[in-house]
Length: 436
Ligand code: ZN
Image (cartoon, rainbow, N blue to C red; front, side, top):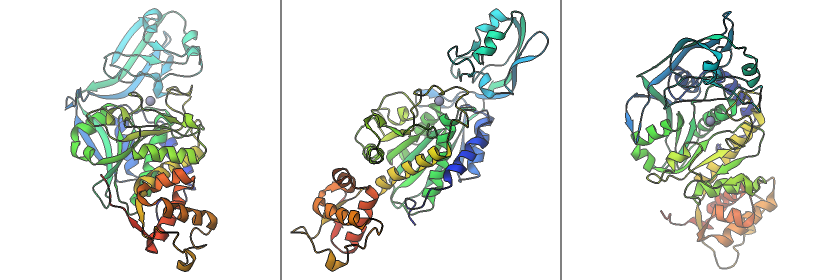
């Protein structure tokens, strides 16, 4: 069975369970939380783990020191922990340096971050490349802190170690590759980025069980520095990437969104637009490339210019819960994860099967009934299957691909693909020579 025909039912619940399993882990761009996350992924799909030493030069960047936290808190004069990393890992600013100090509230305040307009939510902050420390706290708690002396403890290490990332390569029949990439560096945040991880794991498992034209390479990396590190170490594999998707924010209740690659009209861009518009997505669902967001920034930097877009539901920054404690496991829905998986599979189906054909009987319509092609394809909607055959025969002059025909006819790509296979079997279609 093709991976595109298998039902996705039940996968949503499994993906949501994986999001809940990973949620408590304190991830960052390096360190034990990242390794723990990758080892849980490894229990599901056979990713290879790569360890790159701190200090390694990668493109214009340097792999940073490794960060690990044992404990972090702020306590009042009575010794009560008023802010405690053990209660929520968002409380500690990512990459905070070790601290053990007593200070008055006035001095502590410059290290505390809150969201006055969302007084119950803890914000998510990091300081990867500037050595400092801080705590994030809900504004209500911040306002309730009385003047006085506070003890601050950040029992963490920030020292030479490694950057860890995970990679799975599933070979295809050709050397062409599809790149799937998701960042894995956020602590307890569910939609950004555990939803992308869960969808990528299921997508990889689904694609691994089938014959494909493209190899599929799946990367589980820390944001920015991870894609830069992979690109620096893998110029040959990068050159084999024909299509790619960054997967992020795929579990919220919003409608799907696709952000185009820098090229703007790559097959992955046209495939995503087709799939989203076929599901009723409006023009706001398709966004042009911008040089910020996720790792598409690196894949689409001009030296690489890979055809990599970004598949999301509500985009990063466009929902209030983004980068706050409200992006929790309840914000992510099994149904949305399942829908995102099915959406990604539909896009990859087009990447795999968008072929140009030549009609071998182009003078008049070939007689389909005589060849047993009427009413035999796509039993559920025979009329649609017949229409699909007529569209393909009419448009297949070597200049139009199945996706072009899908867009012109308004018929689903999957229906056209099945019809083309039947016509090919009946010797009515031949594959047009592939143009690079
Ligand atoms: Zn983020």
